[in-house]
Length: 487
Length: 101
Image (cartoon, rainbow over all chains, first blue to last red; front, side, top):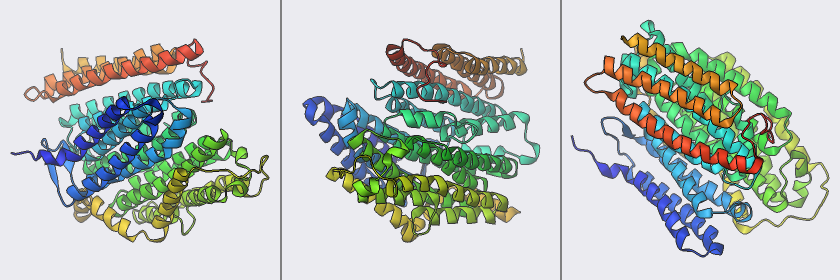
């Protein structure tokens, strides 16, 4: 059996990019480091996204006996993560210049985290999935504590690594039990050996621990306690990266794992995931109402979004898988846009309390408009990305017979509108203390414009994206189709 | 010595580790408790490999990976905790409360 190593080219090139950034950083005078390394990283990632999409298009193979899978699902996510990574780098430039040191290491770590995400989407086996998840976590631990002189960042880093390592322990114990009871760690072999009618207690415990470990990583209630603290303490671009890209990566892993390995036992875990989804979105939305720091608000709002995504996982089908990926894309644009406004405002004023956003509509109408669009999209209002993606998601849940869950999710979206409107009220109705107009740098304006364009693109004309996504989720769900035919 | 013995040992180590994570207040001791959890995993993996999968021994391969990752994790965690200690002169998780839990 010959292995086509060229299929690993995108991963090797991304790893190479990380080292290139570090090397370039080494040869530059300090005042030029930030600009040059950021440009190299952003251009490199966009280039590699195009390269991966074109080079891997239509290719499908499994390397190393199914450990590493190349198919339209992993190809879509590779390009997606690279684009998100480039977005985060562009969002960071001004922030790193003003608030952080060592820009080269910062961008190299973001590149490595993107590499880990790409591997997570491609892993076809539990150990590989675990190792790539750890690579992602390690880079994020360092990025969260990157503001070394800021005690809040130190504290967030400490909490994150302790809870993250603990959750990895749970996940690993689950993996060891699954390996012990089924004798394999390959997704497809797990699916053939998992007989729902006679599942050993060891297997069940293993599955439960894997769900708990992944629940920690995606910040699902009741495993969410770390998220608000870490989101508040981390440097804001890192928070955006955590809230968007790393969450999307965990969902890519979960989608493949559940639809290729655990699907035969769907009836056993469906109700557990459904309950997890229900409490996650309810707690996330209710606690968000009481927040006064914008980063904590967005943290709880992203917990609620995890709840919506879990609705899709509980209703796992072809339609639900499409909806999850589409929602991830819409959520990525909306949440990055919201975080970009927070970053821009923090760079100019050093403020991040919700009431300190008073009068932003007057001081910088465009930034306030972007924030409003992003928040409306997160709430799920029509014409914004969130509406169409949630529509697909909840329809899929209703089709799978989880009508109560779809109803609860819609109720939750209405609750979320309340606290998003609180922010919008501050920006447009409250009077600012200092009414001087803000001067936003050109680069930040460009990033804001791109992100808000993305929000409207997904919301108004999702067709091209939906086609790509349908193509991507087809490959991971042959099992579902077979299951439906067997019933 | 049967497989059950090893499974009980592993489960006990796991339980002690989880208890330590929840009960200890020093960040370093929490880290040590996490190491116990990871070692419980290793005992499990090696025992499963020896009893159920003697020809391939996949479990032992996974255990080697786990040991490597755990070592890297400790290095990183201690570096972060050290930085915290430099700023606060304390590693008590009850006292690091700038961000409320």
